[in-house]
Length: 283
Image (cartoon, rainbow, N blue to C red):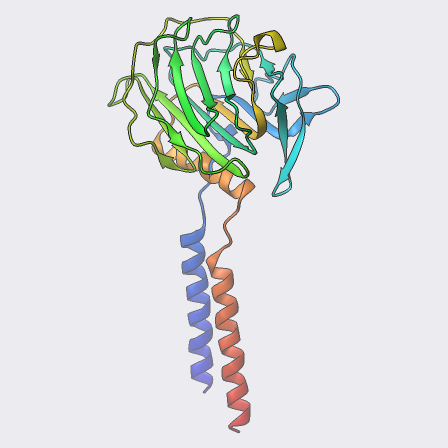
């Protein structure tokens, strides 16, 4: 019987290590990657001053616009946009002809078109534009100065207005599919990422906006009515490994998946108690 319990304990420990290694997600913290250009976490938004502080080393804090504190998700605060304004970020090298990657954690989006992240030039789209349509369709595109010619993938359907989602877009100008915008929602790739139209020329010095295009109500094109928990921008097309690492970071932060090893260990422990109870009764 002692041998049985020794073997049983060894089995529990072995399964715990095995399952733990399988379920452990290898996350990549945004600052681990040198191309990090902007890292906006909802926890760093100040509702009193409307300043959303940038967690990257560039300190690209918002300079104007209004928003408010949003709901909590796993203890982390969102920034709520009411459909009337956008938060403006200083310009950086994120132009239409440059590679890049954008991640956003969003939710509670109203049935109106709204922009997560975009470049602004008098109300026109001049480069990166990452938005959701009135019917809950996420789009990522690279546009010209007038917004007429653009590269965009097929739409990715959002699954619900009343919950949160992860979305990401990668633009790789020199990739296997030139000009491809690789768009994912909740980790699922769109069915078609072939480009349409042509890329625009660089628009240096144009500021970026979060939650809409343009900093005033008069330029209220696609102002977001919804919540953003996190926005991360890289000035390169991330590899599949790095992209998965950032997705794992966001998953662990906002919707952590319980370790199967914990439940399994509890179950095996219960079996051990049953076995020991039977042993006592049989004495």
